[in-house]
Length: 145
Figure 1: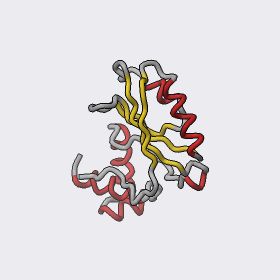
Figure 2: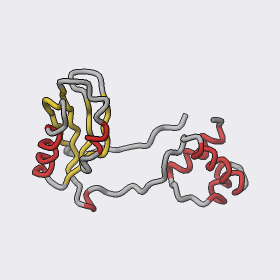
Figure 3: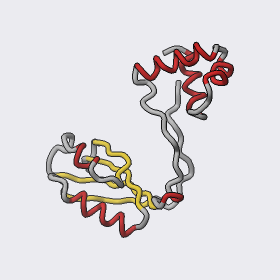
């Protein structure tokens, strides 16, 4: 990946719907050359997907919590079970006192409690520790270096 690819990625992170003509103009390429480079970035898996950033509160998912999941066994093979819980946005196998860290969004703390109950149904889960977010200062995309 060269500096031109990095510049294209930075522009796309600002607005993924930028037309190729404007994208090329911003980095000094023709629209066709910009399109071709973006296509190659997608093929190589550098750009994994194009998505919409939805305000969670606007769609009834204003409660954000991070949950440390403790286990009695290796949880690395449990990805599908965590993915079956639709309120879980992210799940990560981690090192430390817990085995898995999940990011959960719900409409209420009651719904969060229900998610915690469902986590205990996953084989090997022995405990959870939830941290509810009161305010988010900022979130940022991966920095392209």
